Amino acid sequence: MRLALISDIHANRQALQACLAHARQQGVDQWAFLGDLVGYGGEPVAVLDQVMDLAAQGAWVLKGNHDAMALNPPAPGGEATQGAQGAQWTHDQLSTAHRTFLAALPVTIQREALLLVHASADKPEAWRYVDSERAAGHCLDAAQAQGASHVLVGHVHHQTLYYQGAGRLLMRFEPKPGMAVPMSPHRPLVACVGSCGQPRDGDPRAMYTVYDGGARKITFHRVPYNHAEAAAAIRQAALPESFAQRLERGR
Image (cartoon, rainbow, N blue to C red; front, side, top):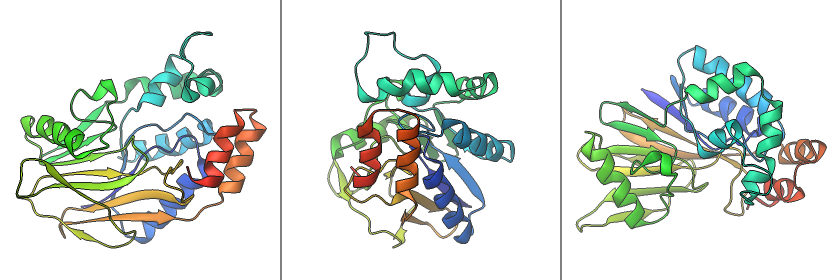
């Protein structure tokens, strides 16, 4: 199985289409979307229509915290985070079918020793970030308690690999785009697949990852896309200017 892992699209149609096209060139035979399909971006309907179509063809889809927020936006005067600012706008764009689809999404999917989750496998609905060796260790411990040894996550908007070394804590590895990293079925790992629609490492290129179970390799990809057009969609929707600038700067 060559599995394309696309996470944190954040209503960025241009980034999604670029990653889908690139992944098809890699010969993937299964799609997985690790949550945060919407939020921040200006084209939630187009993104959901595309993901729903792929889900109908067998793609795996998870719920993220921004998907949950779009279903139940914070009350006016309540939560003041950037994500909350656009949640009501996103909610208003969605049809009943879109909301029903998001509401039914699971927070984890497990296929034998492989566990997919938007945030940490340690209490997935708490939306904890896997952003350190210790956090990755908690994530892996929870996954192993369910019989999984390889955990694939989104949420942090960076591409990072944590693997079991000689010590108790996991080792952190920063992958190079396009370079396959060997995996061992006997070496547990946690892979943060990166953000398709809102990179935050200073590089505006979209991110996604290919997990090749047969070849026992994982490859992290960066894909150029028309981020200026995606930023223009945000401005046209009258969403906060910072959302558009983040796409242009890649952080």
